[in-house]
Image (cartoon, rainbow, N blue to C red):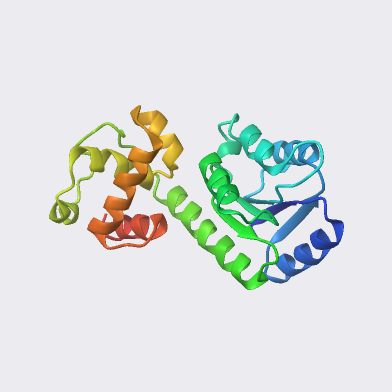
Length: 208
């Protein structure tokens, strides 16, 4: 059973949402402040975090920044569930590394769909751990991918995407700009005729 940590200072929402998540076969712990959440993560290592942004003391943006300081914590998927629904808020959340951003009020069924999609993505990465170097131009061995005629740069970025790196991490690893990485990732989607990272990883593992 997958463990979900819910962090929100709205106690009523925590109670209702945790009951719904439990009914969908998740193990749920809810907490009302970032500091308690960090202690819990250290001890229990949840599979996924759902966090509000607007909270007292530390907010959701501070939370994800702190998670990114720890190699293990940074790999835990974070979903922002918040009333801050402006485009600029979403962009900030994604730039910090959140996996999904859902504005309140929300449809619980959509949240479950997002959670399941993310967990499938993470499970694929664990199941198909690759040992190749991100700098190797010949690390994709399957002839299937030769049909796409990837450039060397596209191969390097594809390798990192398959390993679960986010755009910001890829930019740091390859010493390039994040917007440049986004351009290449979009190009990979077009070349392979997929819509997102999960489909790209599934395509790669299917023909590996």
